[in-house]
Length: 263
Image 1 (spheres, rainbow, N blue to C red):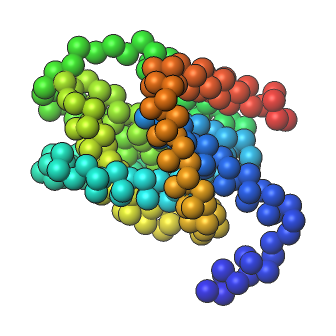
Image 2: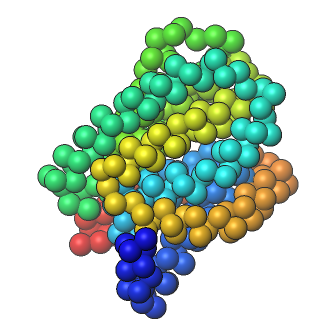
């Protein structure tokens, strides 16, 4: 409580503008996620890093911001969720998250913010190019080894770069599932792992302020979700996917060029 009081007393006009920009970035990510169905985190994390956030703080803000969307989504699609299919993937994701944090802690020690932005930018660019060329032949069931790779990788990447979603999305889209079943699985996975992941992050880093900003943004995020769903339905997901991929390409390249764009 004392820490919160000190934060409030120390806020300036510049801080308020910075907070407002953070809220807009979070709203943009949630809007894109709702409209195009993917890439919210791949936009939010690099943009927050560009503003000066660290990976842990940006990751915390994003995860707290997605709590309502994931819980509401999981509840609305609960009839399509089989809890048994979530248990082991969820455990694999949570167990490997601390390993990602361990690697991140060493990166933060040995590299400056521009180098971290380069690493994140390379990840975003690589995943975007992979998404463009990824055209799997969907199957009802994949060999278990792919799950053993995808979900630990998701947890590890969530810890290192704050973005564990792409590994899960790739695994899900390789299945011959309906759109409702895919969304239900992803909402369920995010929902059961959010609290443990945020808790583990809070044990190692000071994420109070970005978490509070994300909580204060919730009304705007609800509006962004509704607008995103409407825009997605009106314009079509294929067109939005193309625009989003282009935006991700620009974001990834700008991250790689960080040392020259922001000395």
